[in-house]
Image (cartoon, rainbow, N blue to C red; front, side, top):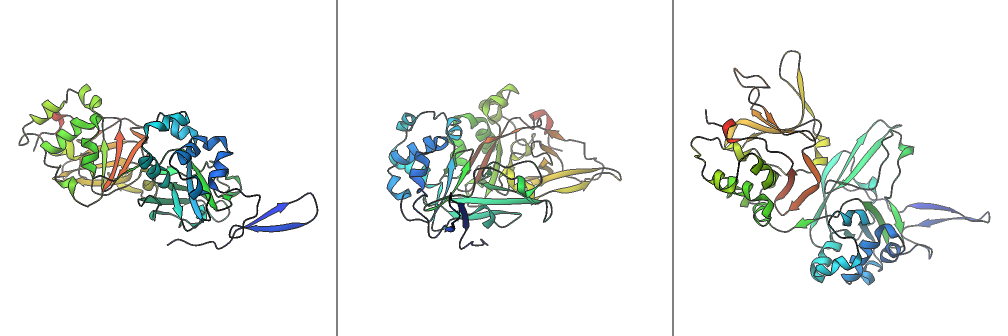
Length: 367
């Protein structure tokens, strides 16, 4: 699926009139290898500190070729890492895994090598875990603009202007032993199932209690890929929903959708939804633009979905339904309900933090 560019010609103009081609598979002495390049670029000084502490300097200065997705200092700052000394809290093995999750060995992968208008292009990193690349194109041959992503995180920085000559950003950076792409978030992966990740994070215990009480917990243990949109405990508690009150609900009275609504039976990064847009006709004169819409497992008369704005999560009676309109029994979170910095890839799915509670017990009585 991946197209290979065997060599990339870089034209360098010298003070004299002589010109020569520098090719990636025959680098010259002026190009530095990865670890040395990052040591001399302040924007990546924290990533370089992680490389050093993990004992990977020699490896990343080696022959390669490598592709490296390099988080900026600001990316580490979002995780509370502001100084090289902050990596002392990490064990060497865990830090090594973190760094190597940003490294692909054996190929120098350019943005243009990602198949156009595609998602879920899998590559296995040096850590042994997979990353997922996507690319979305707009415009025509003369005005093409494309946006590349890794694990839902945009690669490089891209202009909003729809002109291929206006693209800019730190991507496809040639170094002596490969290609570097800048990213604005640290890539994270936990080799645990969805339900273990939720249970091990204290901010999600109301959701865990609801998934257990309404019969979804065992479902999430299998190898199927899931997406969980997950409100934190404080949001539930603002609505009077605690671990104790949720666990005491009569499941014969309240519909499974109260917590089943937060489960999608497919894994997706928010950026993947760019591939999926459909207009559902809900009246003779009205359509609703959706990115995803699925019946709720165990309560299929109701569905969950995300609107075209990528930021509104909703639940409603599965449409079309005799005697009901689109707006009947529709409940949604506020706009901008997804925190893009709070998505967590795990072994059998992904958890997106949802900044809102979609349903309350009084809204989900069984028919």
